Image 1 (cartoon, rainbow, N blue to C red):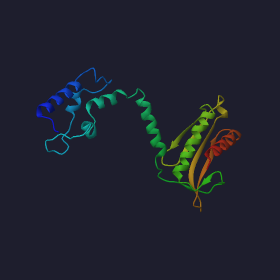
Image 2: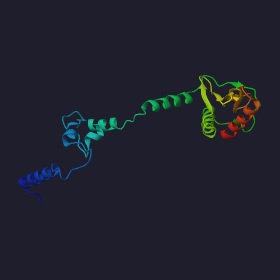
Image 3: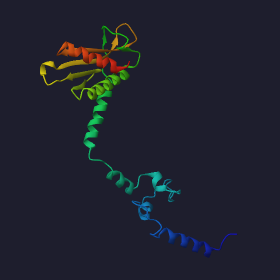
Image 4: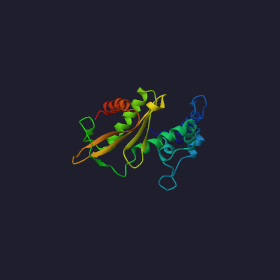
Length: 202
């Protein structure tokens, strides 16, 4: 049996009283009712506010949510931006992938896409940095899948510089990794070359 209008009005009044009771609603960092209501949006343009459990949250982020998000931004945003820029530089498609005649073998060739091989080169160099206590540094040569690498020792004469390039194998539908010494001790380069090839896992 439907209650009388007076009973319904009283029930609504009791609910409103409980809702406004600060002893019942004590969520930390919860927005005030005024903030939530002020953010409600007329979705249909017919003069009626949207209905549902939380209409403000389903239309756009309310101001109190934006304030909370802003307060969580860390102090390392500059470092994060630098990491993002470096990521995009590493993953930037090259203008050209060179085709070369080289002494490739099973460990230095693959039918993977060149971008995937270059990412493995990058991962191998990062792993080498950890193994060699950051004695090795590298940077990408723009427009090509080439990493310029330097291995530095206390004795500058023992330092080694070399290139790692992802290129197309001549006459074959394969891509290869070419490691070429630029300067430095040939014997030390031979050891570094072996480490790079082992860590590629092609």
